[in-house]
Length: 166
Ligand code: RB5
Image (cartoon, rainbow, N blue to C red; front, side, top):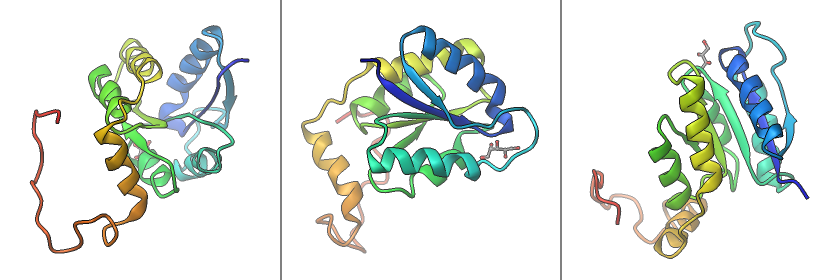
């Protein structure tokens, strides 16, 4: 049975969505296109909500969202339980979003990547498994919230891990 995948965009991501949906179908995926249907101006939230809702409910395992920057789409999608939407602008970020963050939604910045780059990013995201292990614990804490994550408010953690991949 073909893997199911959802895809949606606003006007800024429309052209790229059409191309990626075509590529996904050729690659054997069962693609459900949730719009938009042309390049007329739209509001990204109108397309991100239905996709994120379906991923959150378990109706689909994965979804691809496209807007100008990927940001608006990711803001909406990440409001839904169990949705982990990653904005990725290189294949390396897409790979890490899978390995470390188990990203089940890919948010592409359509105005900042070429079709070729977008395809490489999409392939990296599709082909990379979740590493699990310590990342499983971290991903699980996303759903738990700050109070119940074991650190609580007011505890200062490292600001970032820069280039480390621990
Ligand atoms: C539309 O102009 C643009 O704001 C939208 O596609 C997206 O980039 C928002 O995050």
